[in-house]
Image (cartoon, rainbow, N blue to C red; front, side):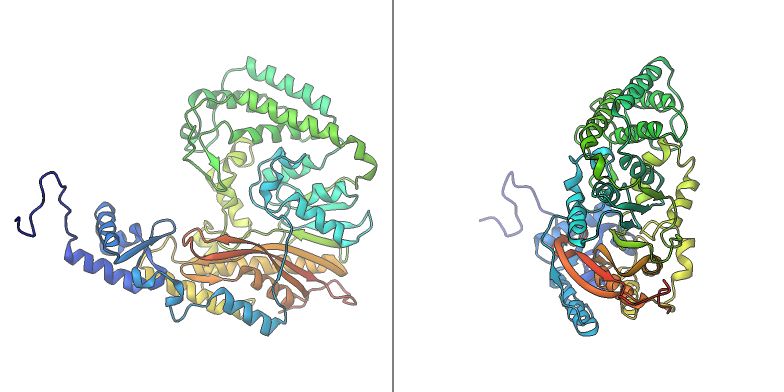
Length: 522
């Protein structure tokens, strides 16, 4: 009989984990507990190469000593659940506190809400804005509002105009605020129901003819242009871009929207929902001229279809390219506000729409992108200089935030390395930004007017952030009455897929009899 250490002929020898390194990894993971660490974070912490640690972690996982969850997050097996942390405050804990402190039980919203429902809808399909709510949700809110035609509907984060399109089609005066230039361009264009589809088609044919006759131009400033597009595609896109008619005439802006709509479909990139690589057909050629023509054809068809509704339209929509935190609207001028703000620590809209920003001429450098990002509601990619003033835990807009920010700060410290060590400052800046928007909307709403927000919660550095409940509480602090908080759907944390998150409709009401249009100060 062969000795125990022997291996049968033809059987691969399994190397035993390095005991000393295994112990170091286990100690590091014990310190992070249920928060866990990625291989990269362990590499930085232990000063060992990632491939070596990856092999070791796989060996430890085979022995059931560690587990991998989500997108490459490693934990000791005993810490697979966040509830193993005695200091973890769960979603259920916050729901109970909200019921006790704010007197509101969470309800349920049963209608459709996700933006993906807009992909094939007239007008909404003109530009691929991947975050927001469905046209059907907005239409239902408008129907249930009981507002007569001619009243004013506001969206302070109007994106590409879902609220504005539905409000105008229902006979309301639509007002939107949007700082992201390509989104504002799309919102303006999508609400111009008076556009002549036949003239648009003729203008597109002339543009294609000019593009076919001109030489390629210079690509925009983006360093990855040669990676983002096949060489032939890149050349044809520059010809098409340079053939677009200049100026801000509605017909010309519609052609720019069609061009912007064509960028990702002919690229090596995909939005799912964030812009990135990994497209399976990345090296297949797709004709930019044909894609542009198809986009214009869809616009022409939608404009034809909407003509019979002309008598029911509201007045032309107003799209304000302003900061929702500082926009000045007449006091009491708004009857209903509906929006979906950016989520805490959510998408970097500047990065996700950098192709549109660069190719449509809204940004000429990375410095332009940085400056625009700093003007938007805080996201994970906000520059450190913009976050630095918010690293302290003073001047908080809600007492719950103190424990949330402290939990994030301690979670980052326990990991030893993290994408950014000022993550708690980003979250603080986000809620300060959101409160400023709530104040502006409160002033603009008439007494008795409602503000509906579709909001999500988050998990950040092992700390649960009840974004929807904090939004409701901030609204109450401003002066709103919290009319309802209804859960619309379940979501999953990107890092910890087993952790359930939610998306919620928060309904705020400016109480009747409140005059002066001034939000309650802190």
